[in-house]
Amino acid sequence: MKLPRNTIRRLSHYLRCLDILDLKGVQLVKSRELACMCRVSDSLVRRDLSYFGDFGKKGVGYNLPELRERILQIMGLNKVRKVVLCGVGNIGTALLRYPFKERNFEIIAAFDTDPKKIGMVINGIRVYPAEKTSELTRELGVEIGIIAVPPEAAQKTADLLAEGGIEGILSFALIPIEPKKDVVIQYVEIATELEILSFEIEERKRRR
Amino acid sequence: MKLPRNTIRRLSHYLRCLDILDLKGVQLVKSRELACMCRVSDSLVRRDLSYFGDFGKKGVGYNLPELRERILQIMGLNKVRKVVLCGVGNIGTALLRYPFKERNFEIIAAFDTDPKKIGMVINGIRVYPAEKTSELTRELGVEIGIIAVPPEAAQKTADLLAEGGIEGILSFALIPIEPKKDVVIQYVEIATELEILSFEIEERKRRR
Image (cartoon, rainbow over all chains, first blue to last red; front, side, top):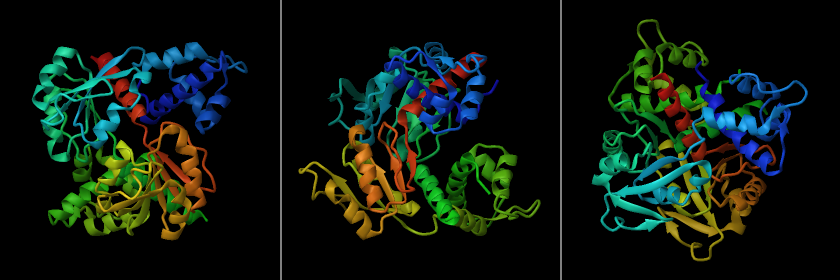
């Protein structure tokens, strides 16, 4: 069973909504409520959730704690994942201050080449020299590396992470990275997001 | 004709590849080459491009300048779009330094509430007081607003941008924004990207 990428993205959104409903003490949630909160169609929610077997009771809804637990399990979010950050520039510093811990991702170390940054502690996270990347990644049992270095250093950084036994990379660098040793790579492409926005603005104009 | 969201995302990737091939002086490009550069299948490239009519000549390939021009036109990227940035924190500062101009997006002003930041010029872009957002957005004919403010200020910032006649918003804030006045909203969700990565790591483990 191969889940569509968009279903996975929506599962993450459903989780946010389930968290909010959970705080309100909701025990049963209808696909319509989730659909409304996530601004998607009712039938899409039902289709997405049907991938994981039969949760819902017709007319009653889904058992919220069960559904939440199942999504967490499928997405591998029911345990804390160790993360390292490579590159403590503007984006890197912002990421160190990001509340990832709430979502079970814990940044436990950062790396940079700048001697002025090495030894700094930001939001409780220490900055180590970049040449320690492989060694520390392996020693600390890190699963995910975030790359926020300049484009020209991205491939080298990815290679160091792969050597350290990393499982996945989230890259903010502007260039594609050649994956090594079965590492999963996910990109955050800000310019692409702007381009998609641009397309949708044009679409809306065309429809007017 | 409604283009799938993923096709639009891939068009942006194709553009990157066409730019690279263009620099090399390539005049004809085969779907196989584009597929290989973007790491997608041959048939997917052909399907994506077929949305825009018949470009390619069988066995010969696509005329590169024509194809590039057509994608730029469809995505509304054949003219410079004016952008403002709201929130000059870590992510905001990183965005001001981002080379968006290469992609025809020009950040022409930034806004913040912090008196220490107002009047600063970063990468040639001046920081104005947040209460000027609507006025300046309208005066300058801005189309896109980037929101990089703390979550609690996100909705208010979006409202100010909407009042200023903005067409689209790219939000880095961690909460959903209620759109006003027909504004297109696009999110950059870093935590969601990490969750998708987490899912793929688990999938790979399950397959081993």
